Amino acid sequence: MNIGMTCYPTYGGSGAVAAELGMELAKKGHNIHFISYDIPFRLNKFYKNIFFHEVEMLEYPLFKYPPYSLSLSAKMAEVIESEKLDILHVHYAMPHATSAYLAKKIIGSSKIKFITTLHGTDITLVGNHESFYRITKFSIEESDGITCVSNYLKETTAKIFKINKEMEVIYNFVDTEKYKRGSDNRRNIDFIDKDDKVIMHISNFRPVKRIENIVKVFCSVSKMVKSKLLLIGDGPDICKIRSMVNELNLQNKVLFLGIQENIIPLLSISDVYMLPSKSEGFGLSALEALSCEVPVIGTNTGGLKEVIENGKSGFIFNPEDIDSMSEAALRILSNADIRVKMGVEARKRAKLFDSKLIVPRYLKYYEKILES
Ligand code: GMT
Image 1 (tube, rainbow, N blue to C red):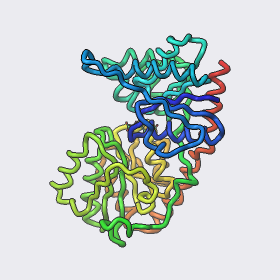
Image 2: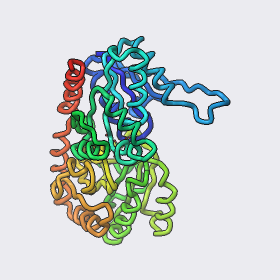
Image 3: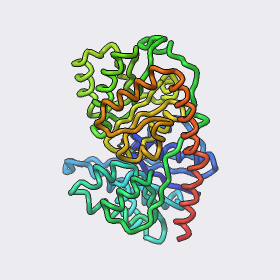
């Protein structure tokens, strides 16, 4: 198939899923045409069968805000025709589903079908904002196919947007052959001592991630166990978190590593992964941690409860329950047997979401939509 793929190219779960899906489908011989304003962050080298079509922004003094959604539609229409796309798959509803709808109208409705994958904040934060609600609902309903990354997200979408169309749940996935625990190579990070326990978190530092609660948990845990906190990524909350770390006098125990492309060596030295988000569509980074045998402390408010088995591969709590999270972290960090046992369970759990199982579901779904 010739498949068009649109996503945000920046550090984030939906871009990661789109890039990984593109790579897996390209390996199977499909031609994947990414259409976005930049190359997605996980596609940083040459891959056979993967092509990139840059959305060029038109600058004009009249435009205070250059119209990206329209430039994207125009590019989609051009690529659908020039590359003879069979299907267009867009990730994150806004504005990608709207741009795809318009591209379809431009070239003639019978010539292309498009699928929208809903990821999380496109439903729970951005899409349901008063000003965006109707256009998001319209664009989801006009999609030829809709997939959600968890049952939680499917139910939430149906409830918020009153969608009567069928929606398919296709979970996030991980290549467990690639995401596996390597040797403990902590000599590469001077900051971490041989006998330190390591708590890790990766994200785009948005308020929904509740990173301040990770720092609060770490503050209490580090009084009891010799440990370090690794914070990876960047985003709007980073200054607030840095100030908090300074105020709590934790500068010598918390390391801000910024955006990192290869997180496997870092997961390989971690003992606990924390993702105490207010809500996650799924929680891809938690799955990648599980795959590297790292137990996860997450929350029971969104899709994470479909990823982590409470008490087995990790623990889930209310996002504000600092005491229970601290207790759980201490339990794992202070007992090597528990840590190893939970790591084994974590790896087993991740294997249920292996790319070999999940990627064929996308292909089957493409075929179903093309036949409908
Ligand atoms: O808002 C974000 O944190 C990033 C967001 C995205 O769309 O890039 O991530 C979402 O998509 C991931 C891939 O499907 C999910 O695993 C994440 O749970 C989801 N994030 C949220 O819902 C907060």
